[in-house]
Image (tube, rainbow, N blue to C red):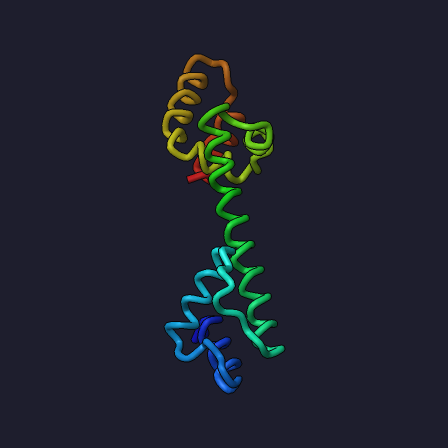
Length: 139
C-alpha cells in the first residue's frame, strides 16, 4: 500500500498545538503546493519528522518536473530540428539480434532471391543449403 506524504505529514503534525494540519484534505493542499514547488507558505511542518517528509516531498516534486522537462525538451528538439546526434548514433549501433528480427518479414523474399541465384548457377548447392538453413533459423 502506497502512503501519501500528505497523510504522513498530517500524522506527524497533528499533535503540535495550534497546527494548521487539522485534517488530511488540508494536508493534501500542502502536498500539492509542495510537490508543484509553489510553496505558498500558508502551511509548513513544525516537527523534525514533518520537515523530513516535506524535504522528501519537495525533492520528489523536483524530480518529477525534471523528468517531464526531459521528455518535453526531447520532443521539441526532434520537432524543431529533426533527429539529434544521439538518436543517429543509437540507430547506427543497434544490436544484431534486433536487426535480424527486423529482417524476419523479408525471409521469404530473400529465400526466393537465393533460389533464383542457385537456378542461374551463381550459387553452389552447398552455399544454397547453408543460406537456406540460416534463413529458416531466423523464422
